[in-house]
Structure formats: structure tokens, C-alpha cells
Length: 391
Figure 1 (tube, rainbow, N blue to C red):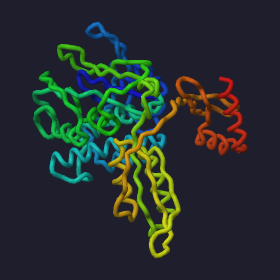
Figure 2 (figure 1 turned 90 degrees about the horizontal axis):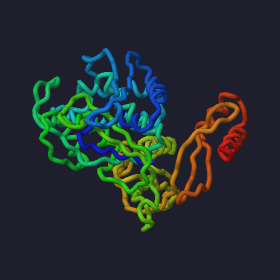
Figure 3 (figure 1 turned 90 degrees about the vertical axis):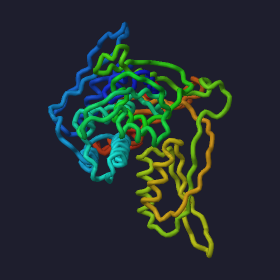
Figure 4 (figure 1 turned 180 degrees about the vertical axis):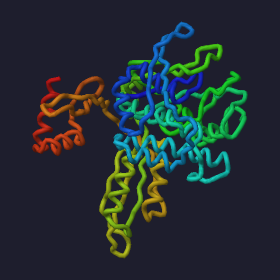
């Protein structure tokens, strides 16, 4: 599943979340996921509205707390103490990491000293985690975005009156060479939250896709034209790209390590997967002077390459990585839920050019049920497989 954010009037966190809800994200499931933050004091309301003849959703996150200034460490503590899915937690934290790096660079301080002002408030936390969790609930595996209009004029922030776009927005978008389109609307159109979400999650291009749903997320202001972000949801396939060849470009990173304990390397592999690696594996190799070693191989999307490299250098003794750009064929994959006698289990459908080739139960769901019910894991697998085959 792909998501394409059509940002003709910019983007903010609540606009992006509203667009996902308008495109079919179940609000109750979203709220249930956000409750896993274990942070009270917020509410979400989704209003269906019509603006300039277009129906869409205005999503309001209500939180009484507006003056709390958090550090990155505070955000990290909230996320790590939460019951969120590991992937959602890691990707949300990566968004805040980008925000901290941009704020630190813009204001001449270090990352851990940055005060999150507006984006550290509870409503902004709900926006960011909500978008990441919402994409996961919808089964979106790749995110794309259009060029961004930034607006003009001045905005009042914790540091005082600043010109639009604010320095953090420029740093965030400049770090990923995001395409910008001119727009002199006298308002901030792309907010730091919106910029951080796209800088971390999106590739700035319109993908080849089989279009499914779409939705509009409305902004707060009337700017004299439709103030919304539009999301397109669809599937990628070789057929959608004209069957002209492999349908995905990936990067293979490799390094040889002979002086680090295996348990530390296992932790590295776990962290790489949490941060978006497509696959991680080890190969035993022999090095000079007869030394045994392991070659670490990481398969990642181009947008995630820098994050993978930084993690390897930070967590291993490696002094360098080799890289190769590869193309690959991929089957279409769809995630859905089936019911077993002990509860719901997610299954992945494997499809090629519209034909279903197989269905595979998710290990984590099956293992959780097996532990909770004290029954054999293979029994849960068999029940989930049978339910999926007959669905």
C-alpha cells in the first residue's frame, strides 16, 4: 500500500491525520492505538465539513496543556514507556529526532538542549504519533509527497516574531532536498510538524500506483482558497509501472566485523529493523591472517540509508560501509485480520499482478496468543492459516 500526500496548500500534522481519517482510517482504531501512549488529557474529534465545494475532514486534537516545553529526552521517555508497536514507536521517535536536529541547528544549540515549544505540546505529540500509527493501520509501507508550498509573512512563536517559513522548516526540508513550489499566501502553509513528518517518512515524487481511496484533511484557517492536504491511497505493482522492469530501487550496505560480541551485533540487527531496514543478515567470512568474522548486510530504501549508516557507526566497531544500488522485483503485500478461536491475528497476503499466491500469519500475533493461552504455537498458526484460506 502506498500513500501520496498532495500538498497543494502545504501540510500540518492535524491536516495529515485528518486526510488519513477521511480516506478511510478507522477513528476508533486510531484512538485505541493512541491510548497506548499512556498519556492522559487529550481528545480527538473528526468533523466532516464542506469547504469550497469539497467534502473533507477537520481533525481536532484537544489538549489542555499548551505551555509545557519538552526536551527530546522527555519525548523519548514517553514513547519508550508506551505500549505502541515497535515500528510505530521507532518511526515517531525518528520524526522527533529530525525536529530536534533542525531546531538545534537553527538556534545554535545541541540536540538534547532543544526545548520543543509548540511541537512538544500534547496535541502535537498526538498528531505525529497518530500519523505514524495511522499509516501502519492502513497497511501503508511507502509514503510519497508532492512539492511543498511554504507561504509567506510572519508567525508568532516562542522565540518571538519570525519570518515564514520558520528556520526549523527550512532546516528540515533542506536536509532531504525537498522540492519547494512558490506561493505568496500570507500564512504559514507548511508547519514544522508537517515538514518533519514528510522529511522522515516520504519520498518527494508522485508514484506509479493503482489508485484506491483518497481523502482531504482541512486546516484551521480560511486562506481564500481550499486549505487542505489531500492523500491518495493505492497499491504498487509492476503492472502499475508498465511491466517495464523491476519495480523498486534499494540500497545494499555491507561491512565486515571481527572484534565485537555476537549479542551486541544481534542488538544492532534489531535496531536496524526497528528503524526501517527491509532486511538484515549475517554471513560468516574468513579474513586476513585466518581471522573469522561476520559480514553485516543491510537492505534499505534510499531514503533510509543515512539512518542505517549512522546507526551502524554508532553501535558497531565498523570504520566503513560498502554500498550498492540494486533493483528488485516485489510482490504486492496486503495485511488484514482473521479471527481464530483465541482472537484476531494479522495475516499478509502475497499477490502478483492481482493473483493471490499465498497467505502468511504474522509471527508476533501468533506467538502472543500462544503465550497468553498456553497453547502450542503451531496450533495458532494452523488456525490462522485455515481462517485466512477460507476468508
